[in-house]
Image (cartoon, rainbow, N blue to C red; front, side, top):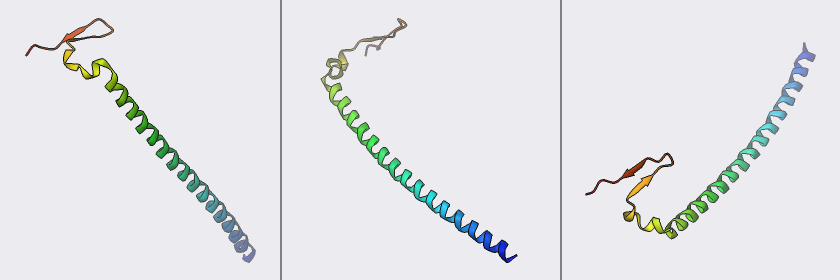
Length: 83
């Protein structure tokens, strides 16, 4: 019985060490993911700024009041009502 208890204690110790190493591994993955997400967020912000800058240089972006109708690919056309 004593041998069984000692063997179980060794197994439990081994499992505890493996779980601790898995915890460390998961913490590292979590840190890397946080870093990657922050970097992606930063890239997205830069792209949004660039798009906003480009949009201001387009001729129709500053003259929206001159747009009278929109034609879809299917050929349907919409017109704003006169006010």
